[in-house]
Amino acid sequence: MALTLGLVQHACDDTTETNWQRTADGIAEAAARGAELILLQELHSGPYPCFEAHPRHFASAEPIPGPSTARLAELATRHNAVIVGSLFERRAAGLFHNTAVVLERDGRLLGCYRKMHIPDDPGYYEKFYFTPGDAGAAGHAGAGHARGKRQRGFVPIDSSVGRLGLLVCWDQWFPEAARLMALAGAELLLYPTAIGFDASEPANEQARQREAWQIVQRGHAIANGLPLAACNRSGHEAAARFWGRSFICGPQGEMLAEAGEEPAVIVAEVDLRRSEAVRCMWPFLRDRRIDAYADLSERFRDCGCGGGCGSGGGCSGD
Amino acid sequence: MALTLGLVQHACDDTTETNWQRTADGIAEAAARGAELILLQELHSGPYPCFEAHPRHFASAEPIPGPSTARLAELATRHNAVIVGSLFERRAAGLFHNTAVVLERDGRLLGCYRKMHIPDDPGYYEKFYFTPGDAGAAGHAGAGHARGKRQRGFVPIDSSVGRLGLLVCWDQWFPEAARLMALAGAELLLYPTAIGFDASEPANEQARQREAWQIVQRGHAIANGLPLAACNRSGHEAAARFWGRSFICGPQGEMLAEAGEEPAVIVAEVDLRRSEAVRCMWPFLRDRRIDAYADLSERFRDCGCGGGCGSGGGCSGD
Image (tube, rainbow over all chains, first blue to last red; front, side, top):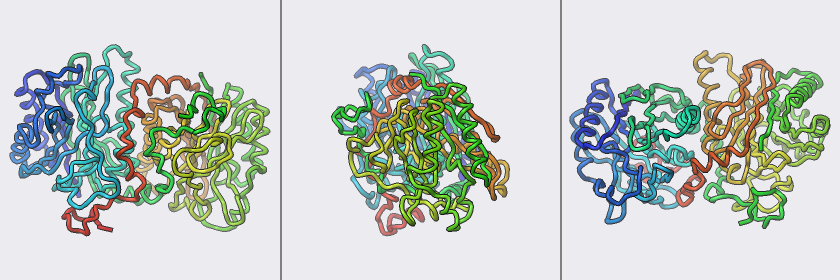
């Protein structure tokens, strides 16, 4: 079951129509190169708003379904491709999310994923804007999870090209997110993202950050025996220089396609059957110690000694 | 707080004294190059026994404390270095573990870690030999966990050179293990290991496997903001060609030292203060969604629809 996957990496400026034109052109190019599934970057219709914390940016939010899903539906239908987009969702007055959406080839909205892990760093003030996605109910996901009826937690979205483990940007640093998607049957891990350098950082630090960003995600692919794609934006905005480097890797973390820092469309063929073979060779899911993982739901495992264990600062007793 | 860390990667043959001489020579070299913490490879005193499943290999198991910990204690004292060793532990008749041990500079046995995730693949028949390490009690670790009083689960071991997150080989593929050690305050992640190629595999598959092995572990370093070292064996034994490539990386996954496939001693200085800076820049521990991670203790999140959700083979309903 070979799937041709395309990623559209572009710069954004203040003109919404220009950004949509870049997105549409990229989708057209990816489709012309055979892509049946096309992944866009995070918040692709405008400049990244979180470089500052200002209420005026809430005006760019929109409902789901809404203008962005309508445009994406039209593009999906026109190019007969499943499209994964990203938008600033207004769920209710004063309640906003950073949300990824999946449009089927026939334009149907299959479901959405609301970013679960929200960053807040200088230049990335996301906690001001985005409420974290709702936690799912404890225990097993119920029937219907795959059809967009639930939009809670780490729930993959079924499409004609497979069960999509859709996550967003900051989620990419958390092995828990990738694992939960894999355990819920995801066949691909997909990350729309917007990450860049702080211009004040030295070149070697910039290189370490960019390499870490790829390595940790390739690690998720390996640990879960799944192909993975991350689509990052390009270009300079405010203080950030978005580093591009969108990539597609296979279930052993092997690079299948990689963009540079400039705008680019990359396309690769992903053989979903390889996950089966790789997981049978390295059967990690067989050997997980689920009897010993309860503390993953703890914030930190303080030793509880009240400071008496003599282990120094690592033991706060709180 | 700079720490000089050394790794001793060597081949093993059927002569125990030869293997111990190689270990001792490597420790001496690492210490001469300034190592205060020396990590050995998995089961370093003999050939890897699990290439076949045969009861005769149980004869090479030993208690803790025992002959290996006595030798390691002597080497630790002689070289004034903390040593992390690995042995085939006989805990009781018919009850064996694959266990790593920590010896303090003064020769004291500080604690041990019993391998939690046990592989079983062609040529790596570990489930025949090794009982998985006991799961820890649920919830927080109790006082005294750092002094070797408990040898359960993912519990780091305190030493004069830091709180050591000691794991073994197959554990290295499981993000859960690294995370639990980090949440318990580990300052370093350490993996004695024995992994190699199957000679029947083509070169490109061998390269993917070896690269995946490094990438997934560098990913753990990144996700947890911790330095990490893996010490692998070298040489041909039975059907395996152990691939060496022992390495030390920093908390952004950046390579600090790396061996080739041949026997080698590698040494690097690790600045434990960098973890503090890296974790403040990328504060992943701040943003973990512990309200949404309960399903990490599930084997698989089947959707529970009884096959009616229309999602195909991924939905077994069991």
